[in-house]
Structure formats: C-alpha cells, structure tokens
Length: 295
Image 1 (cartoon, rainbow, N blue to C red):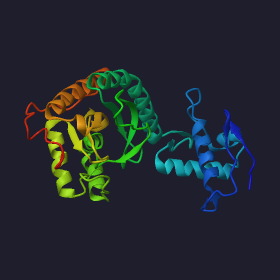
Image 2 (cartoon, rainbow, N blue to C red):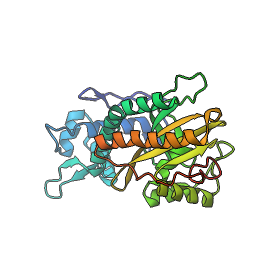
Image 3 (spheres, one colour):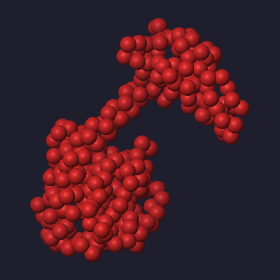
C-alpha cells in the first residue's frame, strides 16, 4: 500500500512500503517518517508551534499530529506550555542534538592525534564511542597500520562492552547503573580470553579505573592485543582512544610505551574539547602490564 506524501522542508512524510510491519494499526515506517517530520518543523526561526499549525504545515490530519505530539511529549522530545498549549523541543531532543554535535566535533578533533598515534606506534589506532542504546561500543574512527599484518576495523562496527581494551575502557567509566546493567546481562565469549565471568570482569574494571587505562589480549580476535584510554566529561565517558595490533609484535616494553603514547593522544584530544582523561597510574610494573588473565 502507498499513502499520500506530504512535505515539510523537503521531508517525505507519508510513503510506506507494502511489507511494512504494522504497529498499533499504523505502519511503522509511516509513523517514524511523520514523527521526524513533526520534529523537523521546530527550527530556530520558529521554535514554537500549535497542533493545528503543524498539521497544516505538513498536510496531515490534526488527530494524527496530536497523537504524534503526545507520544513525543511522553518521551521528552517536545514539551507543551500549560497555558498556551503550544509545543517546543524538549530536553531529549536537545540532548540528542548535543550528542550529535559532540560526535561530529570529536571526530574532527581526534583524527590527527589518532593518525599520529598510529604512525608512531606502527599499529591500528581507534576512536571508539558508546552506541546510542548504551549496550555496545561503536568504532567512530580508525587509522590502520601500514604494516602487512594488522588489525582492520571498519567505522560503525559494534562490539559488546565487556570484550576488548577500548570496550572495557568505556564500560569502566560509564555511570554505575549503566555499567551494572551491561555486566548483569549476557556476556558472550568472542574469543578465548573474553571475560565472561561477572566477578572477574568487575575486578578488571576496577583495575582499569585505578590505573587509567585498559589492556586486552585475544578478547575479541585471536592473536590481537590492545591498549585504550577513556576520555571523560563530568560523570560521562565520551569515547576511548586505543591501539590494537597482532600479538607477534607484542612485548612488555611495547605495552608500556603504547600506554603512555595512547594516554598522551587521548589527553591532547580531551584538552582541545575541554574534556579530561583519568590520571595514569605510575605503577606500570609487571603486574600492571600483564596481558590476558583479566586484563
């Protein structure tokens, strides 16, 4: 079935496909398109709208727009003035836009330090963030090593937060409630050293918080080691800067140097964006740099 198409600033509002799965009697794609179209009318030049005004602007029935606005209000994406009954963008929409700007600014600022980190250490350097649903990591940027044997990670790749240096660096510094929700859930084994025991994982996360960096060996890929340092703002973790490479090039001195250089790259990114990095532990002894067995 194909419905009529309404437009608002070039936004397609009503097209659906025959195989769209219905939800509450309404095609899912159509509902999403119309919801985003409603959000799209709130612009700087006109931040406040009434229900009928939005309906006329989008050529949609008033009851449809009213229903969408009520849903958006419940989710916090719009707020309604009690006196005038008019709508403005809500805190959830502002937060979403803020996160989008952070990611855009972050990638632009981080690319050169990440590129220099990869060049100096000769391994793949990664910029990793937390997925929108806060259940996984997402590769935001990567600069691959020029060496024939190297780790290759595509931007956009998702990985569980309990496996790998960058993922654990994020998980260790997430708000306690969010982190515990991940830890208490299903911990899949991706590789031979993936931490799937919840008690062992909690001990490792505490170690990461204490020393300011994470390490891993064969937690996500066979024969791959990693080091990562988180970048923080307030009580939130923004991202992690990491290095990953094949274990055939691994020794303790390389790990020690990689920790210091990765921390320096993360600090440079954080300083530019007025963020911070955790203090690096000065106890970079044998026990602190062990790879695997909970690191």
